[in-house]
Image (cartoon, rainbow, N blue to C red):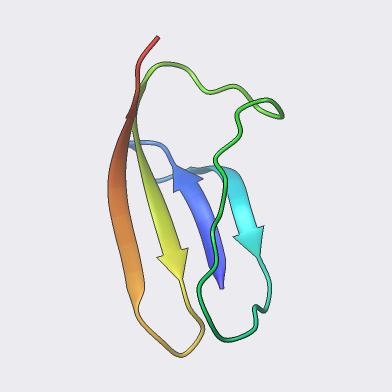
Length: 62
């Protein structure tokens, strides 16, 4: 599974998770400490190998 943050132009600006996970529920924290993002609109995309892809919109406001 890969969870990434994309800007409005579709460029990947951060990776929140990348790798295999055991079956069950999991959480991913969005921590800007490592790479601060400018205020604006972003998309969080989750891709599961051999499975569905989910994209959600987020807004960062300062």
